[in-house]
Length: 367
Image 1 (cartoon, rainbow, N blue to C red):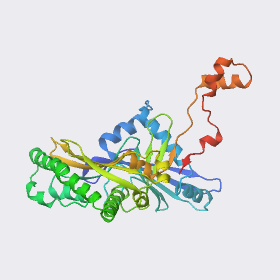
Image 2 (image 1 turned 180 degrees about the horizontal axis):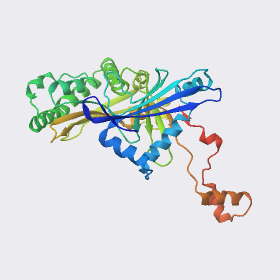
Image 3 (image 1 turned 60 degrees about the vertical axis):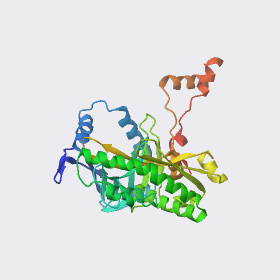
Image 4 (image 1 turned 90 degrees about the vertical axis):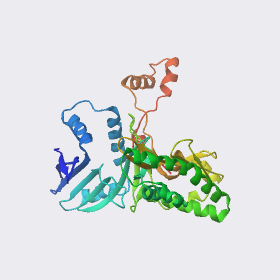
């Protein structure tokens, strides 16, 4: 896979791997994998694979997660496999992994296409990655768009305070103004809105939900998939769509700013018995964090949306935890137990070992 520059952006490259799949019925499918990354990320990844060097354990963990994901009967992927297997045609299968593009209206960074038709859109994340959207820029319009997507709060009185100049000093000045707005404008306004009454609270929840869906899914019906970077290869599938509103309506919310930081957090909790059981708690938990990060030397600000544990729990539709891996020594203990060659003392240790079987390996918990 040789990197080729993408357009005029010399820092972004694309690599293509092509192969074929020969079927027993005589037909042959074309398989194409397209990888788009920054040059700094592309070269070490592809280089280590080509040279058969030992891959980073986290990369191996993500690869295991990816294998478990595609083998777990995912909607769209399973349908494509069935079409490819049974069709009396020469098919073209294209998988595009796009780590650089920022196409308007889509949040997908992995696309599966069959004969030119998009079959599956996925937003890929690694476990622990909270960010799901951003609006970069330190000018007033950038920050106002960022805030207004989540909160129905008027901050226009501050518009003249922002500078339109560029550079580290201008970014730092505007970032200080943002910090003040989080604390002195947004928190009091939202708190008042939540205490005003049911109608005002309902408007807040609907506006908040629409903003979350916009930045998590864009205009697409896609899954957000989180791969575990550990050795076991687990994954979560999240669906952030309009169905979230039904759950959000069963919750109470509060907002808090972080002292001396351009940061605000939204917390939620529910007293609905069914939802409490699903979430596993009736206490306050973080739904969302908005923060503005100053890139001092670069002279700009990144305004970031980050998912809290509560939002992840509300939108998780599949949580796959594979059986624990067993070592050859543990496997021998199990065999010895079966034939009565193990002592009572050792038996207790063996019974704690989770043994993967055909059913366990092919199943995952859906809810």
